[in-house]
Image 1 (cartoon, rainbow, N blue to C red):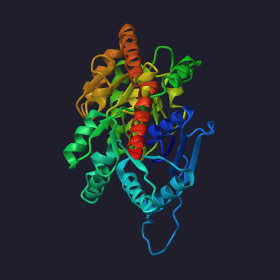
Image 2: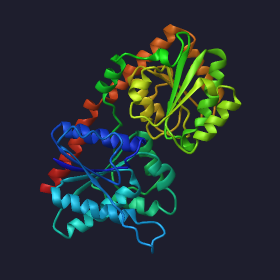
Image 3: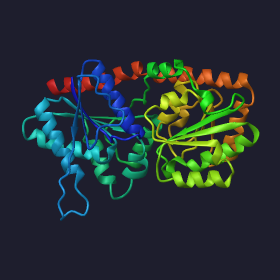
Image 4: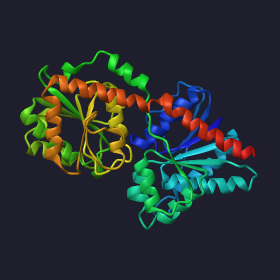
Length: 378
């Protein structure tokens, strides 16, 4: 099949999933065309089946804000026509689903029937899409997609609660390339470069937005460190970075934290980790937690959104109420203080992560694409 993928080309979960999906589809013999304003950060061009089409916006002084949606829709039309695409798979409702609808209408006037698959990822629905300024357009775009998927049952339920949705939403979980994470685990792990033999390592990965509550990460670590000699690795960058560093200095743990910024070698870094901290305000799924679990890391997280579908309380880690720093620290300590307990959680985490392996999820997307193409023929 010939598939166009539209996503945000960033380190965020939706962009990572879309890029990994596109590369997997290309490896399976499909022609995949990424359409976005920059090359996706994890896009690997080793496959000849992968193509990247950059969306450019012409500067015009009349516009205070340049109309990206128009440029994106036009680019979709151009790429579909030139490459005979059959499917447009758009990730994140704003503005991609709306832009895809406009492209679909423009192509219909040319006698081209392009099918649109829209995948909902989380904050595009819960925080942005439900805003009165966007709600009507997002609702319209979802209802006029050919197929709609969400990355968790919780997100499906939330979408149906916030919007008047006529389309059936199919849950297709996020996935991980288990082979890649196994390879990372099997490589020489330079743990000694981070921590002393008696120290444990905790890690957090995010875009450091307010919803990730990175100050809670630092506060949890400070409590753990009082009982368990440990280090904290913080991967990512964002608006809350300065606050996290300031709190670390205030709590006296700044010298025990590594702020590494953005990295495309997360799997290698996670192989050092004993506990992954994710005290988010909400997570539609929790891809970062799943990536940690794939390299045998226990997870301490909130019980919000789709996280209970990924992190199984008392098995792969523990769930706590939002903002309950004391409980999260207590749970982390209970895992770390005994090596046998820690190893049991690590093994459980890796075993559960295998259920979300790429080999299990990829065929689901391929079947969705096939069903779209069949309906086109019929």
